Length: 321
Image 1 (cartoon, rainbow, N blue to C red):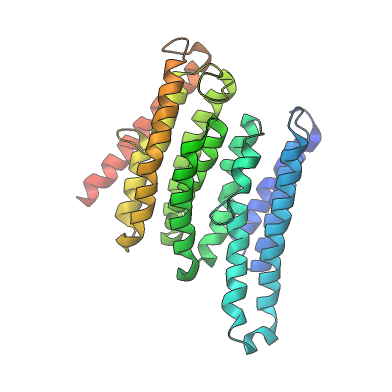
Image 2 (cartoon, one colour; image 1 turned 135 degrees about the horizontal axis):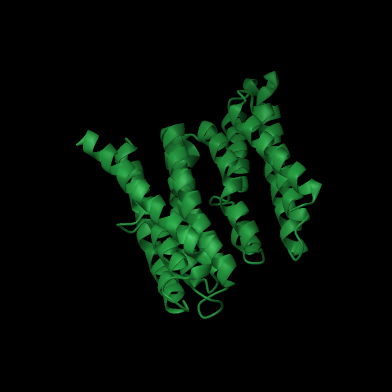
């Protein structure tokens, strides 16, 4: 934490992200994505105990995805490409797949579980939460009807089915992020404000679970010390009522105009509820006390988060109805 490289890396991470989402040029968006990646690599490079496999794999993935995006952008900028109408949708699809690669969406998702499984809890939170914001923001501009259903349907099914075979909480959260990726794509297509609301809700819920996992040393069922916060955080991530995650999904259901695209995200969330419930029960049963004193302050934050969500959405739904 006192390493100056750590703080400088955070500056690159934040500035790169802002440049990528604020620029009206695809090339400058690529520059912002690269600065963001460079900053993240600096953040994890100074962490002791983190497996070199994580750093190398993440770096290779980001290089490949950035290369795909850059080739697409530069090719579309050349005038000769527009002489051949066939190449335009191919190049656009290449750019979209590059961004999906960065965001960990189907069919470019396989690196996410393998990377997260050998990471520490802080890196899990960064990879599955913080580092998803910028690619999804850029992807919301690029995605067209040709690939949007592939991302949504594939991420919903692969994430929900893949999580059923996981015996480690980190792997479960990796497939959970893929399921939530389908909802994030839907929200990003609808509006920026809807995406930001859903993303912040997902990030807060993920934060509660990762904090519980870090403090309790959680690895899998029966491995580590569970907690009330971890169990309830898993239920909130699943989207089950009356937790806050349920209201964020309801907001998207009410906001999306074309309701037919909601079939697979809802189906994926229903299937994923099985491994969420299993993980939640395991965390609650392995808790050494009902109220973990080590997480007392964070538990109060979780309670306040849900209260604020109830008040906000209650007011929102009251005005609509």
